[in-house]
Image (cartoon, rainbow, N blue to C red; front, side, top):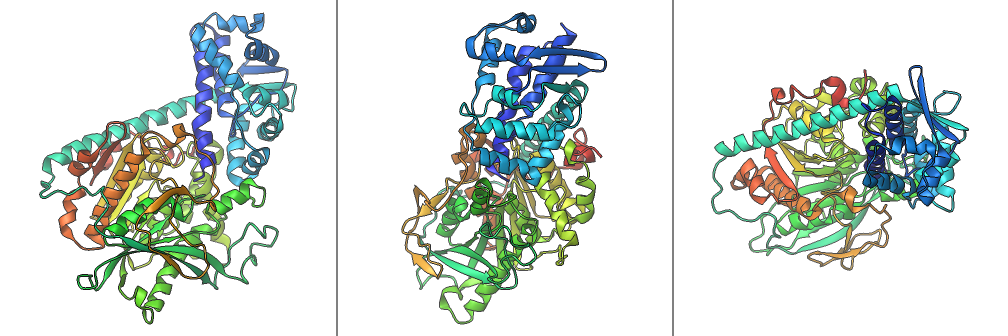
Length: 624
């Protein structure tokens, strides 16, 4: 999922909190409570940092209505002057809360108006706006989603920047009406979900503590977080699958049915090969494929690829065109209409299968690839890449579940559904394939994957190979409860693991996008002899700047966990070295857990552990 959507889901609840603090004591005044809920909704409205426009804000609850002028808020924000309109409510707040309110009104977001517009006109942006439009409305009381979008775009163009006040000033109606009854209901549902996520997090911690009692002892323990004994070579190859096209940002006006078909689907692949002494090198090298997330690229997991290569694995890292950083850049520049086209749900797993086919063919004549064991391959992916890994593992697209989950997106708390529901378009396409299982994939790890609707319970339960799911308890893009914790309980494979990073976010395990030393961008096969990645960013990579608070605490620790547990998992199930299996335990996870970012691993999570948690409606975040 995108950095923009994550930033949105993180920053606006913070603004909302300022208003909750100021207008929050409903027991003292009904009018106060009305404005509390109203401003709470305005805090959530902001899809991109927001700003106000209109003369007055009207907050209605049944037949009761209260209001406050925009000018009163403006005067207070800019000059600290409080008129009678605002003073009625200020008497209930302490000075610190008042200062927080003033800061929130003026908080500025440096975003390009084109970026805001492109996101808000995308299917994901429109779905979010329609939900906000149920609560935030113009004077006519119709859905406010179009007015909200206009105000956000205009405010982003303002010389003063996008602020909450500027949003109000640009709202295309003399008044803003807020449906408090609906707002309170939404707020209550959100609070319930937060509490249930906390319950699930604690359930995992409890199960891990119980599993530690029966875990086998770790003898001759080694630190799997450290680099292995081997250097590695890295080469970049370019593949062209003539049977598939890609809707390239450079040709957005060409019909999707024909776009890119003349040149096929062209994509680059980084290949990390360990340097082994010929006399002692095994005849068959284990292979792992890494699939990056939406809006990311091959460099995002260079730290993991180099780590696995240093321990003797061949690592293949394809870049998925159409859902990579270039696609995100095209969206933000106005050259693409969405962050990813529906066809990427098919193209991503096919990228990996085509890569394995290509290497098998090349190995017949090219000595470079003859030592690769391409019949027993591991795959690891993050976010959209997590879906890719699980699809290759045997979970097909679940069109019935998508139909059920995507009928009421205006009421979802799970923003990953905005992406998952795009897969419905494949059901009516010329290519109706939904099963992408590749029998060469023998073990899979999914980091922060999307699963709940696009795969669903029935199809996830079809996976029969060893599977690990990694969740971040504070992930607001692919929420852990919806997308990882409950889906883990649907797995039926005997070898399954759930890893929880607390309070991990959607970005905790993603690297700093390093570029290897002397790396080549030649479209032909190229190679360098760098044994470790450099720390300088790749100048060819364009990505959104993600604030530290969105990334979360101690990402270095999260990446150490990923290196250690992925190594143990693939050593056990791909390299077939059973002496690494004891590292796949609650005991080992606890032994490497850091203070600021806890990690727990469980092999089981009985359904009754979540029985006090969400039902099916909550699991997908949609009111059925």
